[in-house]
Image: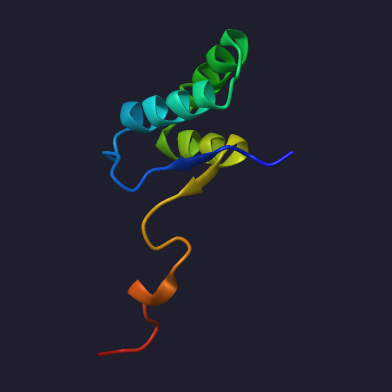
Length: 77
């Protein structure tokens, strides 16, 4: 089963904004209340890095440039 896609392009980078975005995506994916509460508890059980790892565990996390590397270059200017 594929993971729900959460787009963090226009989401403020603070932890609570990420939790809200993931919660909305989980609701849209028809997760039940217990699954969502478990997700939130796991996201809050560590530091910011842990929160991001949990988001990537349950969601296909997208942001501007994640599918299009043209905005990023390895070449020196």
